[in-house]
Image (tube, rainbow, N blue to C red; front, side):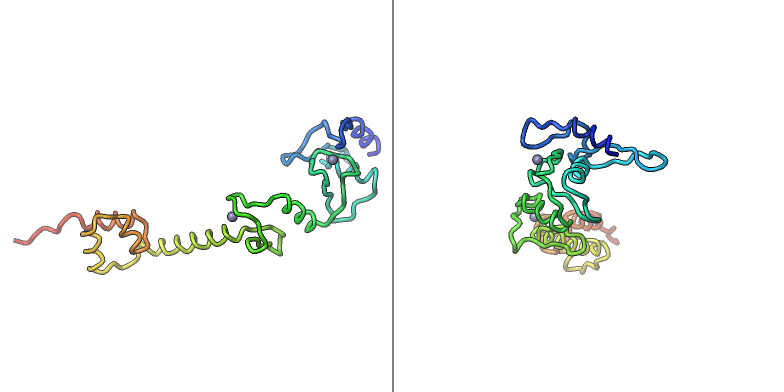
Length: 190
Ligand SMILES: [Zn+2]
Ligand SMILES: [Zn+2]
């Protein structure tokens, strides 16, 4: 293990302030290395920054995470690393992202943090989702809706599908379907 960490040391580029890992990174950009551990010499992926912290600073208590103060994920400079709780790590990470993916600002009013997983939600987007969900539930009821004769007459006499779909709160396809199903006049009894 010590020998393995020695090998990591020589692969860190220390020309800048950050000690940049020249080896592989995981999908999220963190430096990783496979280290043989235990009896069967099984290979376990370890984070470079955690190994460097353990060597230069000390052990990392169970469940604690390492925060990169420099925000450079493949940096192994122990001076840039700090042990923090998961919640604190999330809070710091969030503070670097000021807007939701759809561009709403994470103000105090617009932010909801789910206490079970510390995930941050944009209240504006959450409201939209609830609205869309409610709409689609209403729409699902649509086909089973009983249309009155007056409503059907209105649909058949009003050519604007858009107006009708807004008036009845259903999809335009629903209006079109009703129109189609009533388009063939019943054979007139002579
Ligand atoms: Zn750094
Ligand atoms: Zn949003």
